[in-house]
Length: 137
Image 1 (spheres, helix red, strand yellow):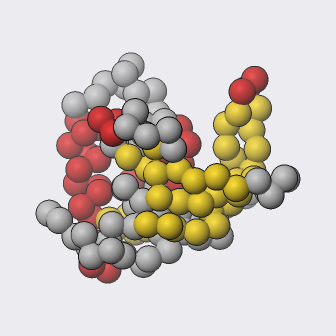
Image 2 (cartoon, rainbow, N blue to C red):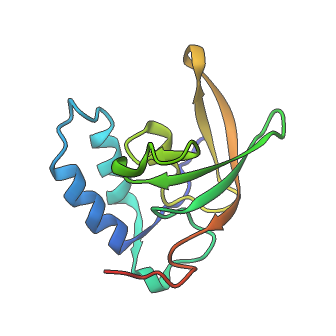
Image 3 (tube, rainbow, N blue to C red):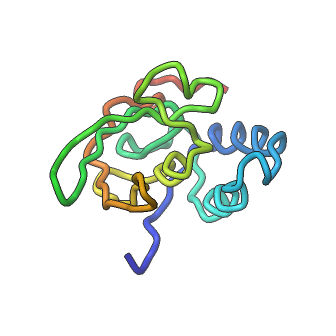
């Protein structure tokens, strides 16, 4: 893909992520600079202005593998919640930070075992806190 997809980020997510990233070193999280760059390029909106088709923190997302059509669900969470459920993926995981701010229909490279990648598409936002009216500050 030659151009990066548009990112739409919740101001509340950005605020919480920046606080979290301030407490994590680049050694602890090698993707720190990349995530900060993604935040910098994102279109930041107030939670009540978030489109319902965008991946925000704590969103549950249905994804499909382009080559096989296989689908799977993931929930984007903060590191403290990553182990709470098998489908949870931490924002500190490369793929977690890669899906933040993407919209239904966007595609990304998904890392796999053996240093391989596959192309994955965001099919649906099953749950998004902002769409559900959870706009907590």
